[in-house]
Length: 158
Length: 158
DNA sequence: CTCCTTATTGGTAATGGTTTCCATTATCAA
DNA sequence: TTGATAATGGAAACCATTACCAATAAGGAG
Ligand SMILES: [Mn+2]
Ligand SMILES: [Mn+2]
Ligand SMILES: [Zn+2]
Ligand SMILES: [Zn+2]
Image (cartoon, rainbow over all chains, first blue to last red; front, side, top):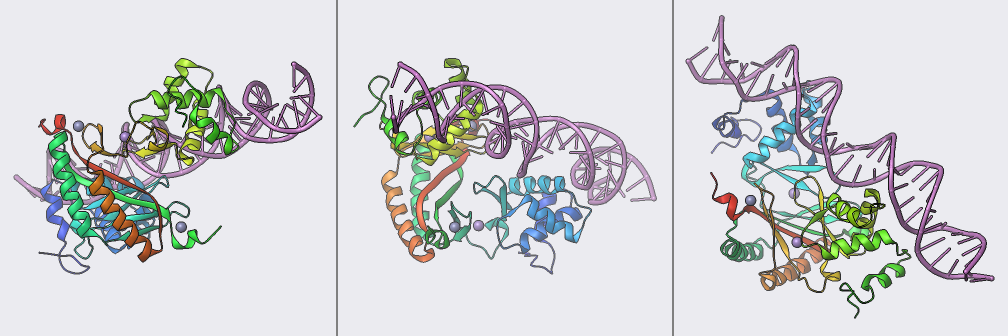
């Protein structure tokens, strides 16, 4: 399976064309930024990074591309409560990342990824999804789990 | 313990005064609407309902009061992804409601409360919170669990 | 009850992230 | 190479939420 890890052909081109989307330099750049990013970028973050590589790309295109990427399941969109959406490459498109959730500091807005307890979580989710699907005839596609509290820095301040 | 279930003295007055907040007719009305509401009201929903009882109360006051109520833990604020915040009386202030989470239909935005699997959840959360607190020195205060998918009506439409 | 401090108020303007609009450009199948 | 049309960027619009401010009202002191 093609990875597109910087060199090599690009893993998402097929995925994109298969849905009737065209490959453009803007989309290349935006996906490149997301691939190279380590953490939770806002649309503006992405725009600024992309702008350094190609100043011709506009903020509108960033929003539009992100919308497509999210709809394809290649990118995940989060709300951490600071008024702007955050994006990160989804597990599906990032073979180096694992399924994870977030710890959110309600004081400084720091976000910590964690991958622990995936087994506990899997078991819990399996049971919950099965039961809820049956009881509410609800077809569960995805889930969101977040913990809120104080990070180590903030808990030690008055 | 005073309930304030329509008649009787009002359960939240002490809670309010204790924090230096004054009791006003606007705040009474807003809490009344929240108490009487069955589901997930937006600020504007609340404003419209309050406006019917007392047209003098402004939208700004609704927002300000909700902010206080959320900070006191009497009201919970949610983001269901439709661009506006939703509010509901918290378990803490609503003795008839149980701890629950939400199923969100990504097609029609319907939101379903569920209280099932609280035991499974409690066990999962207990373990996760304990482990995460230890590993990340993160003091967990709250959690958010939501499931996304298609409700029974939407799953049966092409 | 009356006074006085000051928290609270409502209306309006401002904010800011996200969308919409539309004329122009670029992609890519034929 | 060419043509249909998807994609683009910049500006304007959108819209939930906040900031601002002069006017009001809650409630403790006397
Ligand atoms: Mn993450
Ligand atoms: Mn609910
Ligand atoms: Zn913090
Ligand atoms: Zn639905």
